[in-house]
Length: 334
Image (cartoon, one colour):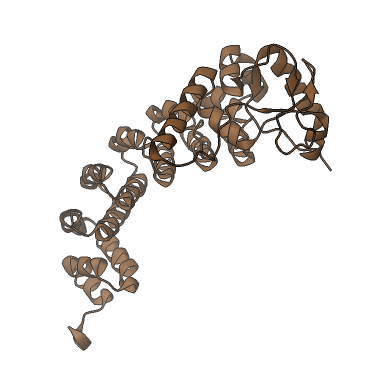
């Protein structure tokens, strides 16, 4: 090799697919993108050799091969990439999802739906985008469920993906997502509703009350008598709060937690399991432990700069119904 090593351009001109694959899998990072581009230009003749390289021992090599196959596309590429969705390496699965998103073969829909259960946020988010790009209605219900994911970026991607598919069955869920605690999710949901062509007011009126309640509120314990200020940051030293009064502080941690566990029973069970796992590990439990909002006195509400009108209304509704809005308490506007 040495001074007589062929350039990527020479190999492309001679359609030297195996030589280009060697460059793709080699250590020179500058060659990787150029070799990929050359293999894509050659097209179909590159597919079979790349498929053989898809099972390379080196996980980084498998990632590059999957990426190249995704850019070339073709019916022969889909099934091997679907198999890569089960690869033990996160990066290989990630590249396979991206490649299937590029190919947009409907055979990948069900496997990509299963990938929404992956433990890595980045893979879930890429699977959501891939399903939106493919545009198959089978993905609508799983994407609606993904609107409830803990990570706001995944929820945002789900709203956008539902817009790509454009199925009206998603409208009620998207309207409920307009009340999401994260503004990017709210904005994405609004754009998708416009894209689908939904009449927001008309559709909002048709959403059933049970669906509204399950999506917009969560259950919480209410004291049988008066309450006390339970804000550790408040200097009031647990001032008594008469029943039906006070201010409710709903923070982002609670919204994220109760979005996943809206019923009181499921929230208690989840918190108990978490505490048991931590105790079993022999470590101190010093993290998040609440399953409901914080009832605060006026001094505490002012110290947190809460919107007093909203926080008081939330508290009143909580006292009366045991339900808490699934959104963060807004701050006082300057």
